[in-house]
Length: 225
Image 1: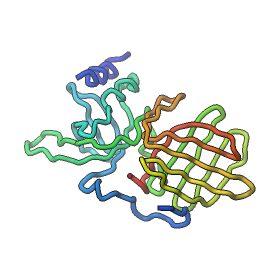
Image 2 (image 1 turned 180 degrees about the vertical axis):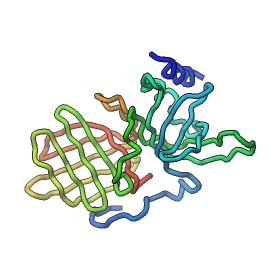
Image 3 (image 1 turned 90 degrees about the vertical axis):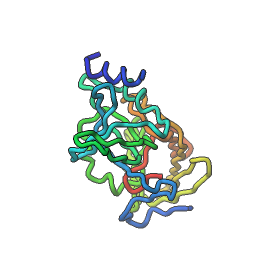
Image 4 (image 1 turned 135 degrees about the vertical axis):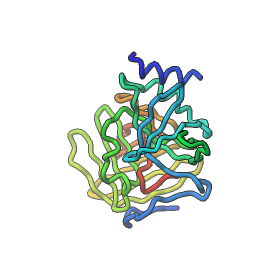
């Protein structure tokens, strides 16, 4: 492991919803007041974990106030350059000292992955959620316009959907269209992608006409529960 990756290792040791309306602004719970959803780059610097939002020069020292285990997760994912993409929610605490980085009190880790292009995800703000899995490959994107399901060896399915809240951070998306019954069951449970190693904040189970496949999921920019 290269020096930057070792640096990250050192740090670690220290209602019913219909998909028919375009969402112009992210949903936000009242409990998230004062917190900001941000995407950007995580690096290790001077024994600390530093977050720099996409297309910004500001840097924030990460304080894992929400107990997300981001330090340990970052250490396990660090590549040779020690850079990672992170999708997080937290509270910015400005520094009173000139020339000193402000602090990000991190409350929620949505996604952590090795990626050099995630900041350029053009439709992220319109995305309600994305789920994906392997063996065979599948990918589902849901927005205010509906869901799009892509599966290896199958035609793309674009349909409207319903959302049902089940409690305890669990919910599902479902549709019966074009002769197919599609259900996506989600739980607020940390999930590690078996192929890429990326960390996402929800586990997913896709059921198509009774056939089950599992994977991971995260909320897009149109929703940050």
